[in-house]
Amino acid sequence: MKLLEERIRRDGQVLEGNVLKVDNFLNHQVDPDLMFAMGEEFAQSFRGNGITKVLTVESSGIAPALLTGLQLHVPVIFARKHKSLTLVNDLYTATVYSYTKKVSNEISISKKFLGADDKVLIIDDFLANGQAVAGLIQVCEQAHAEIKGVGIAIEKTFQRGHELIKEKGIRLESLAQIAAFENGQVVFVDDKEQANAE
Amino acid sequence: MKLLEERIRRDGQVLEGNVLKVDNFLNHQVDPDLMFAMGEEFAQSFRGNGITKVLTVESSGIAPALLTGLQLHVPVIFARKHKSLTLVNDLYTATVYSYTKKVSNEISISKKFLGADDKVLIIDDFLANGQAVAGLIQVCEQAHAEIKGVGIAIEKTFQRGHELIKEKGIRLESLAQIAAFENGQVVFVDDKEQANAE
Image (cartoon, rainbow over all chains, first blue to last red; front, side, top):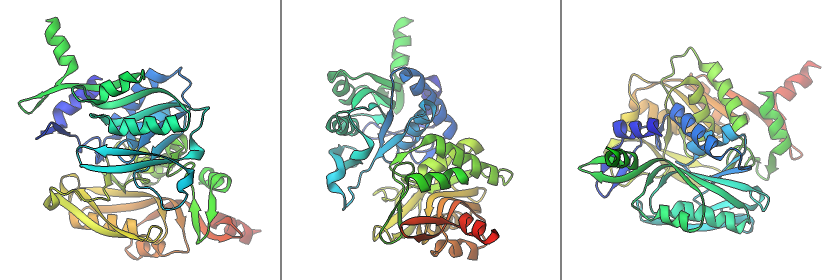
């Protein structure tokens, strides 16, 4: 998605350790018009798949997931990262390790919102090691819901997440695919393909 | 807003201690079309106020704030509840006590996203004791930003939040105003007014 790639190039900051900071349009300050365009892309990709629920995890997955759900006209569920003290038996849960924050979180969703009749589209802002998506997949498996696909705003193709989803035979659509960071600049898969074609 | 009141009546659950559970359409599973309609209401109310930023706090404020920002075409900032370990000097922070969860959280936003030129619309899902909104107001004050108003999805008019905002001379728009809970049912301010008029 050119619009997102251009925005990353313009406003993204490459920090040490291959961390891409996009807190001025994606995950702290959010550009709603960009989110709408991203939601449109995801909705177009997965329309016709009979999606019944969009699933994400709080907090930065909510914006792209919501605007996808808006355009598919289906409910959006955000998994919570902090398990409620009550109602533990009524939850599907999975443990998610964050390499960035170096902490494990238990993510959970209420059983009443996901079941065997559901066809789920998982949406998240980032795919790197794939731990958050793996947790959301586990939650869907517990609910016996069918996973129709995973939609990611920004994918780092050189980390494990991509393989992890593909190995499960799940369709993956990423709007911006980062091939590498070189000299503090983002190199997209699209750039490499273009360079190879020239 | 009739649409929201009807939805609360149909899908809300009144729990012990005057807690209204709306996790099936507002703050766990989210109805994007309802959020869009709510965003439209807020945008209509505050259009013409020169709003430059919509401000909320993660996680359940994000959905209504985002769809308000979408319709005002301005960025949406969500304050974070868990202070980052780095960059502490670059943050505006406030302490927010949650009566529901009985914990204090420090909320924070990056200084670079809010300044003296900003005209801010604060949006949140619930107004009860007003602690979250008070924290967001503090953050705006630190930034010397102008607060043009507060938009709330569901207000419990019998708790302290309403007064707290009014005392500061800030405009408050709530889409559904709860006057009381009676026998496990929600009584809206609109119902009372209607009863008085009859």
